[in-house]
Image (cartoon, rainbow, N blue to C red; front, side, top):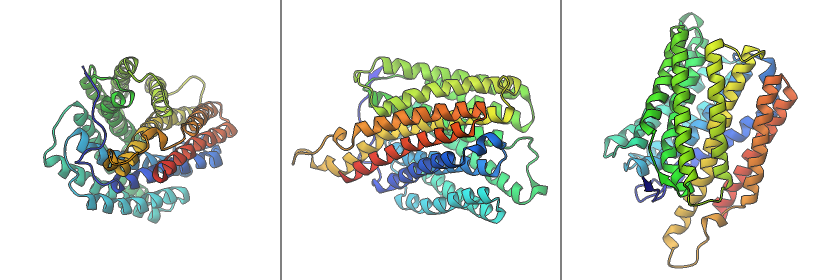
Length: 423
């Protein structure tokens, strides 16, 4: 057990402009997707999981928010966690543009159910993801130093490659139904490859480094290897069971994933209890509540794996509520919470670190108004509760109000970014 030291930027780190463009896209995706929920919340309670508008909103959040945030964080963390320089900043910046255009095309294509627009967008997104994966792979090939955190990061990126491949194949199936994949329910394996295999495993891994750093706590990996093994096995079980219509595999995968989530939560709780920085700020509060939503989502996932339903709630609405808890409450809040810690540090580091000792420089805490961050946090928590309860109850009004609360949280985060970049 060691006390967390160091930072999230070193002399190996890329220029701030590389991760920043992905961070800003991710933040814009969060705000736009939550505003869309506020405006079109009825779609979640009146439609099905195959609703074109629901597919558009889902991909606006996952491809417009989650994935670019992770890409930006990966460019920043690979040099810190794996001690490997990013192979090509130019390639990283180049990959951003087809990805941006592709996400716009995919969301528009789903919304209007236009196959040419959707297929073109999907190809550009795949190109952007492919260039990102190549850049990371080349970076790791030249001098990476492996460890538990790095293993989780690389495993997660591997699942991203599978999720992207399955996604493009499904889009091709939309365009040519006679050649569609013979899989009973493609969204289930695709969603779990992306949300569980990729996003969750990545959050699990980097949290073993970032949470001790942010909370000033001992860095421990008590269950780290088990968490990675169970999370990866759970993803494989759910995906395999979905592809081959095996309920036994789905249930085994759900159990493995749930146990992994609880073990990881236990590790995080242990480190947080032993933190020396007792004060909880809004960023850490987002992370703590995200852990709670992860455990709730895992319980709902087990129920759906065993019975296919959640009490008297219609199956489609139960599945959508499960997705909202997992994507927004767990993954979204984890990312936004850690973003509250990462962005101010990077803004300070790249603007002021070279001036330390030569003149008076502001502290990181002086870069933005913490009161606004807390207002955003409170609105976001009210928003996610209203969103999920509204979905359970079939209330479009509650869902729209929930989307509005989440949008306030996103706008507060945007204000934090603006202040950090201009002060």
